[in-house]
Length: 259
Image 1 (tube, rainbow, N blue to C red):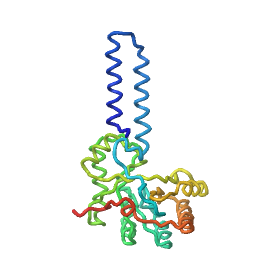
Image 2: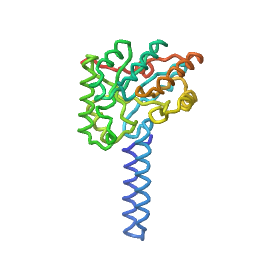
Image 3: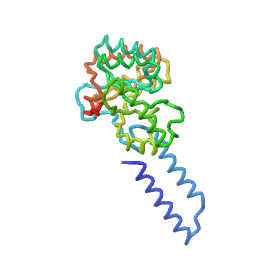
Image 4: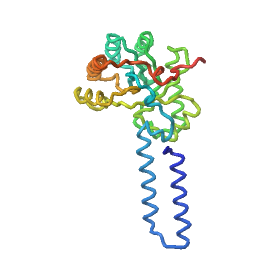
């Protein structure tokens, strides 16, 4: 498996060998630059792919599931749109997991109450979801995790176990923070891109092409078009005999832990 640790070790050895060789033969500096660029490129690409497990172990699906079962997740709420999402989920008797942003929890505590009262799960999605979250040091990331946990735990009365990093990006700082917080990283393998794409048909077709047993779907509960896509998608699942189960059941992991 390609990880940050073994990749870094590999390139450090290569660079050391080049330095030693430079004592005996002429080596153009461009070789060092090229190796450095390759190293950084591998790190950047894999840091941006949550399923790469480059920095941390992320649970993105369950390949051992052979029956038509998948899990639904929503990011970036709670918001006013979450209420419409909840209405659709209730209509189809489906449970989901909501990865919540701390500052939004403070704005809409009543929505968190409804999410939980209707049998859905909640997870940590950072406090700020800042554009610069990937550049935070471990201390600041840990502060965000703990702050959001504290907000959610007012409603769950149990320790939050699930964390989804903003944008699905992982870094060495996130790894260090998670080593202390002990959160389990929950990813996805069916990404709708509804956070950026507005075209309902494109989003819907993108999802259904990727549906397979044991998958985890990523949607957002922040825009109207996601509500429309969700209803279409749930109809598709019914027609194709898919069952939506919780992330807990799909991955055999607990969303909460008793204090």
